[in-house]
Image (cartoon, rainbow, N blue to C red):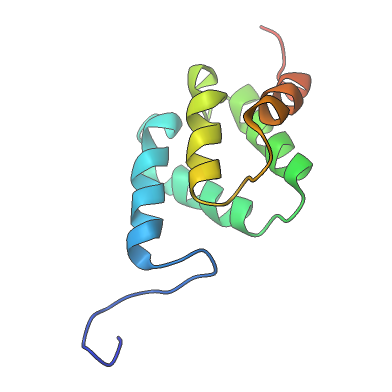
Length: 103
């Protein structure tokens, strides 16, 4: 609780409000599963290597935890907008495509 009496959790990437927005944007990509979206946020925030972030994401797509339809532009935009992946969208798409299992 802050001096003004508000209950705000500050993290490396911003305020509780920013984290709530991130979670709300990610939930549909995780088929509405809030817990998995929270776990993903934690893992991505704690992973500094961009390739590892994409590999982990592809693993979740391959396990059907993340929607394959949303793992390209939709997910890239969310991560990029929140400063969690700063490389280009074409880089994201190139790398993730390397790790997705063809069905």
